[in-house]
Length: 490
Image (spheres, rainbow, N blue to C red):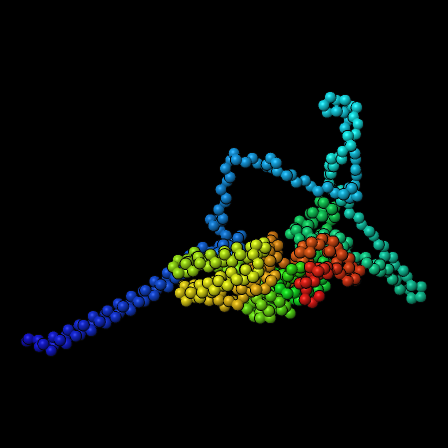
């Protein structure tokens, strides 16, 4: 029986509906696969960027760079153009001579015969003699003092009484200079306890057990408590400070070492974490300008102005520039502006331009940088990182308007280099007491070096003061016009 036209239309419509449904399913599948491809490409981009991270484009230290990413060595100089050593006509540098009053022995040496003809008839020529000094050290022989504590018997009651040591006599077996030397070796020169033990025996002829080495550290830690507390209080009242943190190990557990660095004093703390609460403890009472990186632990700080480190930003911009598409373009432009900014900053420091000129030039840089960051936030695949930088917009330019503030946090980062070496050599500390010793020693070392004061002399005086129950020496800088102008509390 022939199929009617109406039935044919119905069949065609059904077939069309099936094809439409199939097409819709295919479109959905294509959309799903496209989304997965985009996610996969984004993930690949992220992994490649992470794989390519090193000290030049992230906050990773140079020591973590893999061998295939080490900075290329400079091309060797062409041979034949310049000989090794000092060049002809180069002004020589000799060791400075000590004044006569500091010389142990002086001997005048006169020529015995003429070097030309051999005659012994020589008369003084009258010119100043050539001075040749030889410095050496004596064989070190330690001295030992002895106190004999006798016992007396009471005639009235028969009780025996042993004499007490006189005031100022150490209760330990080692004097303040030797105790200070042990702390100097472990805290400043990064010598391990066994190394200290051997060094004392080989060079100073002193026999000391490992437990005694640790006990010397305990004594020095106690002697430095008051100077440490005083330094912390002083730092709180400064007009500006740099802060940073690095990992540490205590009892084989990860903790964090923090530093608050001012012009004349640096204060260290070993704390359980890298949290807001720890940062608040470090900065407690501080109301000056704070220079840091973009660590979220410092987001709470609103007591004073803040400056974000541009060295960290520059590494981020390098990372952006190494990506493709719009992110790479924005990164390249940000790098150019950053290099321009640093060039002008160095010209300001060298006195080539005035602060007024620097501020005027920086207005354009600021506008262009913030426009690029906003573009990255809207269009880049790394929008989150651009957004994070923009959250600190108010803290990017403090150094432009406030004298005495730099664009980087290099000051604080330099302060933690010495502790990082100690951590790598020693593995950290094995007790809470050891951590307190490290805090106070690092604070003492960094502060005294800034003030160009002798660390061993200071430690010796602190140990003497502890033994005699007298006030210890201070870590604060001497009151001079240079130091008073940065101390609002003075």
